[in-house]
Image 1 (tube, rainbow, N blue to C red):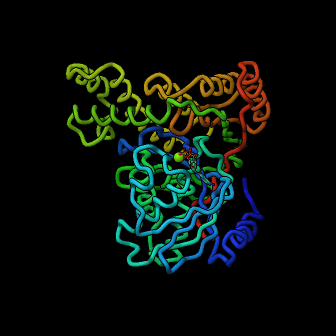
Image 2: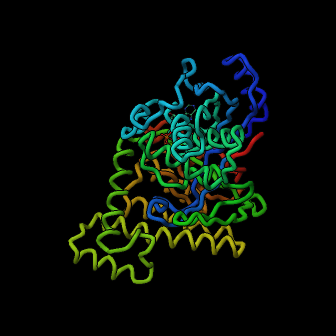
Image 3: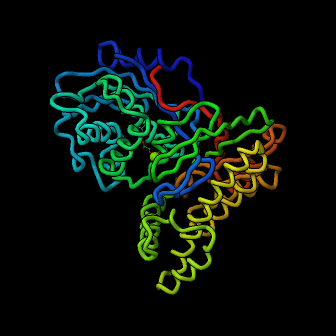
Amino acid sequence: MTDEHGPGRVTAEFREVYGTEPGGVWAAPGRVNLIGEHTDYNDGFVMPLALPHTCLAAASPRTDGVLRLHSGDVPGGAVELRVEELSPVAGGAGGGDRGGWAAYPAGVVWALREAGLLTGGAGGADLHFESTVPTGAGLSSSAALEVVTATALNDLYGLGLTPPRIAQLCQRAENAFVGVPCGIMDQMASACCTEGHALFLDARDLTQRQVPFDLAAEGLRLLVVDTRVKHELGDGAYASRRAACEAAARALGVRALRDVPFEGLDATLAELERLGCDAATRRRVRHVVTEDRRVEEVIQRLDAGDTRAIGPVLTAGHASCRDDFEISCAELDLVVETAGAAGALGARMTGGGFGGSAIVLVAEADADAVSKAVTEAFGAAGHRAPRIFPAVPSAGARRL
Ligand code: ADP
Ligand code: MG
């Protein structure tokens, strides 16, 4: 959702909230992940693209060490904090969003200070946010909020941070301050994606490559289907999946599951069984190792100029998320099955799972029919109508 009036509007709202002019306006996008699910915290490969949906921030620095945070998307006045008093405990670490929405931007300021980047009274600021990224839809509104905060402070305080460094500090904020054990993908996508490209990222060393992803030129469309459900199971399951992956890596004596080769996977799974690893954990390992392989397959097909050919790889990725990693749900499965039956080239859940969004690759000529089929299937199953929109590969964080 491109919002051409956004900068003027957040500037006017900043003026209304704080009674002064902002020093500037910044934007950071949400994302969808094309392929590579739950691989980032296994040091593996991911391939997200930025959405046109962005979190905007109007911001000014302050010299008195006070941090004021206001969101046009949350009722209530500005949250006022003292920068030197920010601590993970006060911010709500361990509970995930326990400190309320302000824990995300406050956590970023905390992470910048903890890294020694803001000393003395520095770090105070007035910030006003407004976002077109749907929240809790698996499209990373939280990363957009963090990354826009860090990008604004980077400019306001002349910190000289690169986009990957910004992403790392934002991940630190979400892990240690907000208390969500996320990987690095969402923050890297929001900070580093570029228009017209998907971002191939090696989550171990943050090596990245911008892969041209021009759907329109090939008569294709990538639809995002926001199921508008978020099953409670999600947060605990994320942590338990992560723990299972780490336990399996320890048992195998490797640093992370990324180090388990795809060739010889069957032997590795047999070895895990011999070591007493349960069947569910072995399925988790199979997902991660085959998913890294699928990212490489998607890259190869895109490099060969055959975007249509990634469809079956996406659908295979969904089956692996559903059967081996067990993070799908009825609504996401329904999107994938219905879209496939209605002529889509491929479809999969995207993001953490247990609700949120799916993506559907479809020929432009079939897009309306596929959208209609999915909406009707949701109606017939008694689900709320999904929100469906095209994913146009867009720019990463920037000053406007
Ligand atoms: P996702 O990142 O998939 O959208 P999360 O649960 O990780 O879902 O993050 C959503 C949370 O991020 C919201 O509950 C809220 O606390 C915070 N958030 C996101 N965007 C905004 C915004 N524009 N204003 C205030 N808080 C926001
Ligand atoms: Mg999030």
